[in-house]
Image (cartoon, one colour):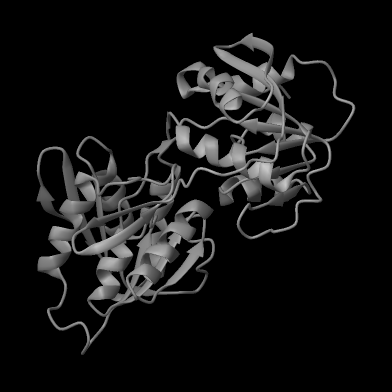
Length: 335
């Protein structure tokens, strides 16, 4: 099996390794799953892929002990610059000083900035290879005097939001979410405390939708495939004095047998730089089995995305509740 992603293709051409390989924040590449001993990732889909092949898989938030990171560690540089810094400083924090680490990534994803970032932290940098529009660097961990505080707090819509690099909408409320919330304002019952809805926020990001709903008294369950998003939403709810259940879930994977009066979502269609409709397709197709009688799915999406056909296939009918030419809010109801 050959590597599929450019960064893994660059690794594939390196000399055979003497020690086990650990991927940190890697893409979903079958070659890497086969070649590596384990993975550290915030993405549940990545963790599940490694576990399915009997490999070790850990989250940086859930798992506090890092003795498992024994071997050759390769950090896959993400397109979110501050997220890359977070991973780099996390490795310096959890690994002994002077531990070898390789950093690989695509040129259009910011890997060329890594030598400067390493130098700013007193870390050595050797360029090992350059191909497939990717670069591979070698460095060693150091004990840092301080770490960058990458958690961002900002105020929007009367709420304090806590965001992390790499989480959708980092540091701002995107236009689509604002349009969805405007629709929710007019569509939801005006007296939620008397008859609160059991609402699922699918792909919760920094928790803006969950906090907005919880502040109005609804019973909120928030899920996201990313541990960074789960942590962001938990912090957002906590700082606003709100309650809600927050779970890491690959679409409905953590919600077997559960039903909701309302499912709301601003579903992603990008995975790094690639377009991927897989999660949104599963959201739409599986939503009917997770809705109560007369339950509704409300989602916002870019106007060009092929969701109308998928909503029609899953529900038999749907409505467009808002359309500002860039985004549309769709409603489909269980009958």
